[in-house]
Image 1 (tube, rainbow, N blue to C red):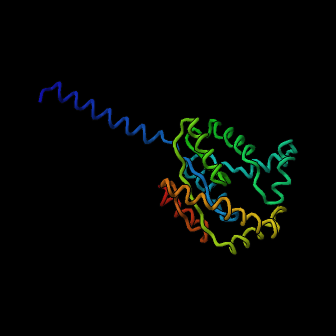
Image 2 (cartoon, rainbow, N blue to C red; image 1 turned 180 degrees about the vertical axis):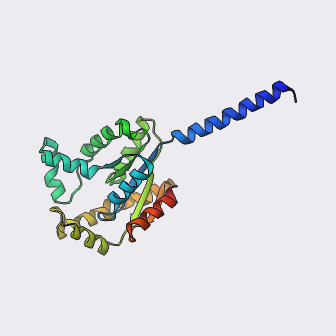
Image 3 (cartoon, one colour; image 1 turned 45 degrees about the vertical axis):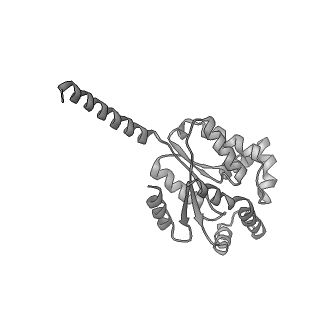
Length: 210
C-alpha cells in the first residue's frame, strides 16, 4: 500500500466518523406525552425538560393562559374547557405549529396534551414534515381510572369536578387512547407504568428513552 493510499484511507475514515458524530449530535429529541388526565404527563415532561434541555410545551397551559388574559381565543375556549371537552383542532394546531417554530425548539421538544386524536397526530406529522423534522417518540403513561380520579380530585382545581373528570377520562378512552396503537404501529411508542412513585416513573423513562 502506497503512502498516498494510506493517506486517502485515513481521510475517508476520519470523514465518516465526523459525519456520524454530527448526525448523532444534530438529531433533535422530539417527544409526545400520552396518558389520561392525572397520569403525571406534566410532571414527567418537566423532569424530561431538565434532563434533556428541551422545552416542555403544554397545550393546556397555553389555552389557560389565553383564558386568564381574557383574549378573544380565551373567551371562545373557556366554556369548552369547563365542560371537559376538546378544543377545536384548527385552534390547537395553529397554536402548536407557532410554538414549534420558536427558536428554543430547534433541538427538540416535549408536547404535553397534544396530540389527543388520530387526526391531530396526522396533523402533527404534517407540521413536522413542513419543518423538515423527523418523527416523534411517544411516551405512554398507564394509570388505572380509579387512581386518576383520586389524583385529580386531590388537586382541588376549579375545573376538576367529579363530573368533569369522569367526562375527561371518558373522552380520553374514546379519542386519545387509540393513539397508543397508532404510535406502536410505527415503532415510536414507549410504555411506562405511571402508577408508581414519581422518581421511579422518571427512572423508567430515562432507561427506555436513553
